[in-house]
Amino acid sequence: MIKLPPALQRFQTPFVLLLLMTIANQIGFSAWTTILNNFAEHEAGFNGADIGLLQSIREIPGFLAFTAIFVLLLLREQVFALLALVLLAIGVMATGMFPTLGGLLITTFIMSTGFHYFETMNQSLQLQWLPRATAPRQIGQILAAGSVGQLIVFGLIILFWQVFGWSYALMLGLFGGATLVLVALMTVGFPQFREDVPQIKKIVLRKRYWLYYALVFLGGARRQIFVVFAAWMMVEKFGYTVENISYLFIINVVFNMYVAPRVGAMIIRYGERAALSFEYLGLVIIFTSYAFVTDPNVAAALYVIDNAFFALAIAQKTYLQKIADPQDMAPTSSVAFTINHIIAVVMPASFGLIWLFDPAFVFLTGAALSLCSLVLAQLVPRDPDAGNEVRLPWRPAPAPAQ
Image 1 (tube, rainbow, N blue to C red):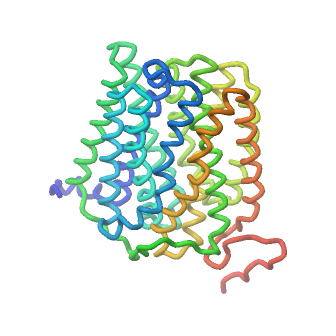
Image 2 (image 1 turned 60 degrees about the vertical axis):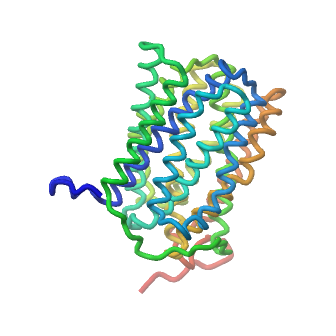
């Protein structure tokens, strides 16, 4: 680790490291997400079925995220998170070099492995390093920091595409390289932070976490419909170009920079159940609207609002933080990512085939999944804690602490 001047040493904290890791992740992943659909359609000749297959391959590492707990037998979580970012960067850099179905499947798998391992470690470290009293607000600030990284990426893509006429491959190489540089700076600029409670190094599935698992499962299914098909709709149905998508993402980012920290404050004030209920009710409306939208401007507005609702997923994280044993954070985060991706592995490919015949059905399925989540969210207690994980009408509320 580089010894910094005393004035800068106060920034060598776990919270600042989480901010920077999130920015690095977003620089690589956002560039890939923004460029991919246009690259796949214009240079690799993809159709809806091809993009569905690609996205299914992308989700396989998410399904295998439980294997992260075995890697932790060899590596500390902080080191593992940084190495995952390196893998993500390599996948992003290689994507533009292989404009074929086979090439994109391989590079996507590499990028996705890094992304999903990083996200698993990132959630675990957030829940361990951030105090329960302030975690919702700080996680919101971390999301806002990620939005800053996205904003930089989208602005530069517009500049490089419109002004300098850069190729897809050159832009992907630049942003993947920038991620690697940030990882190098974090590696030498921060000490190895210790977790207060040693984590269990095996797969953990606890019956009392069942509601969290169910919410994560349904959230993964509906997320695929947004990530894969809402974005594809903007390109295929409404003819959005790479710069159009970048402008749309910039609006998303600016909106999220304002919303995410306030979502954290809202969760602290009103609780996880209220935040989750608001999210799922809004998603029912949004997905139903996706099914019938015909105006590109209305579709863009729905896309921005839909993206903003992801900030409310902070409530899922803090619900786990409140009900789980401290030593369960890493194994439960790993298992949760696998649960989140159980249906994600098959949904993009199968729904990609359905898309060819009835795109509306894809989005109405998203509305149905969101409705199921809304019903389950009513079982989240107002003040969840260990021993008070689920609110059941026939079970008396726990007595208040003396």
